[in-house]
Image (cartoon, rainbow, N blue to C red; front, side):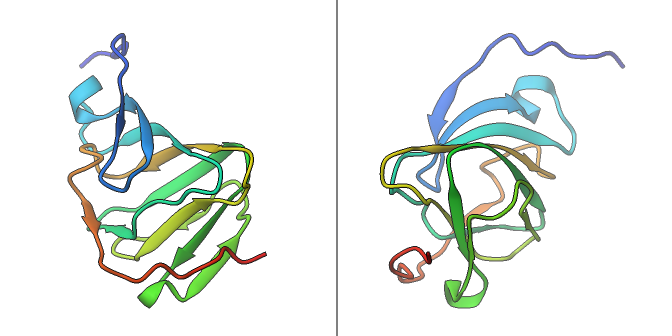
Length: 132
């Protein structure tokens, strides 16, 4: 077994309608249980409601301000979470940029090496305006 140097980078729009800059995954590095990407949310935008089946996630917010609706019916909110909000497996959530003028970006880590495979989109009504 040897270390892997990732030399090919790509950016894409994920199922959740978020811009993703691919870092570590099974596709880029042969990872067995880790996914590590950079995700960007434009000013005033949000992801599609979703959950990650069987996989935990955490985000390190590197720029901007973010918030998140989560839980059954997206009734819970976390306005401007700290640097490491954790999403347990199978918990519905909808992250958003909390600024109307600045995007937010974060490094996302997930226990699924196939980042998009465990994403399940949900048909949950938009919870409305971001909490202040």
